[in-house]
Image 1 (cartoon, rainbow, N blue to C red):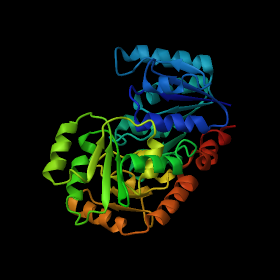
Image 2 (cartoon, rainbow, N blue to C red; image 1 turned 30 degrees about the horizontal axis):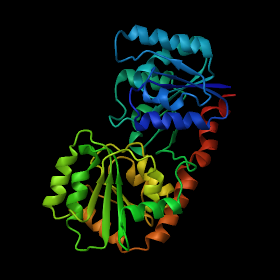
Image 3 (tube, rainbow, N blue to C red; image 1 turned 180 degrees about the horizontal axis):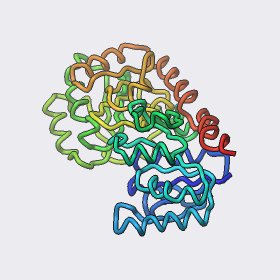
Length: 353
């Protein structure tokens, strides 16, 4: 049994990440088709998988991209093909009849599933199954197609609680007896950092320290610092404007993780990583977050500063050590690579033999 995972995105998106993780748990010979030099290439290079390079279907002539995938398919001769975007799904559909593989699609784009005649036709005639990252993708397009839902996956060997890491960061940040609240995510409007700061300004308490970890992208760090200072939070909020190599240790140090996103989050990464590191959660109710974050270890709320402040305040009064243990248990049992491996293999491979 041979499976080909087609990763045709140019960035290290949550969709690419989930595609890599699904491929990593398959109990068969797995190869990846990807764009040369892209983040997926860098992540998979040297990991022992056969790597095939395809042309970007969104640059240059589509025929060139189609022919590059055709060469890969004829060379590797897969029994199963998994695609993550529409272009390669279409190309693989056109070649399926001659090569006889089973074709699957992973849906996890924040744009959702396009409700077009062509998309419906491809799903009904050529797609053998879909993996959905959220129940919000349960539309008429995939109604008649076999499906499973995977909100996200976390590698619990890479992300797990570290007592030494917790002690290191709490000492470095001078947390003391305060509760440490963590936010991890690029500085981008959709990630809701401004909402988070405004929510914190409503808390009538001083027993917390909040730390925001994330690189500048579409929001300037200076703008967030100015907002923090104007809200009187200078002594309560710190920024780490970089990608932390020891992110597991930071997450282990946090008593509460907050996901204040205003949109996206249709594939979950950071919430599951916090959970695996034994951290309770508060999140907004966007994307797939309400499908994962739930009592007792977490609260979801509308993306408004008053409701987010109320949820954070409520969680800070809870036994966060106990809730963190529950959070970790849920991550291991429901969202780890190990626990999802049988489901993924049964769906993609075993029943194709």
